[in-house]
Image 1 (cartoon, one colour):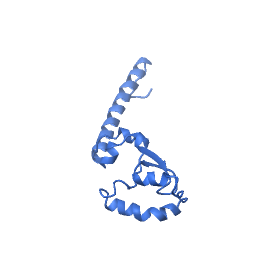
Image 2: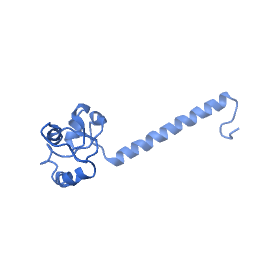
Image 3: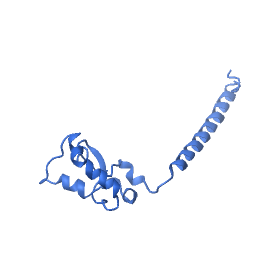
Image 4: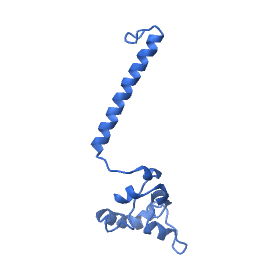
Length: 124
């Protein structure tokens, strides 16, 4: 997880080295090795994953030992990721923001209706 938090968008690369399909991921020894001129091109999907699938599984099982070669898919937003949050906290924050937004919209609608001489509550 720390590798995601430490990374910037410049630490990403689009590579076909894991799945055979272009995928943005954190640059590491694995992606660099596949990008070298003296290595074969990745196979197409799904054949490349048939080659790499076991490595992915082992990397997930031993993430700290595989940090230099692990499959770390990520978008360019990685540079904005700066802390880990519980999913429940994120959902609660989204609900609170929704409630605040709908309250603002309700007040705005009431003001517009008032300016137009219409009772907002009775719709008409």
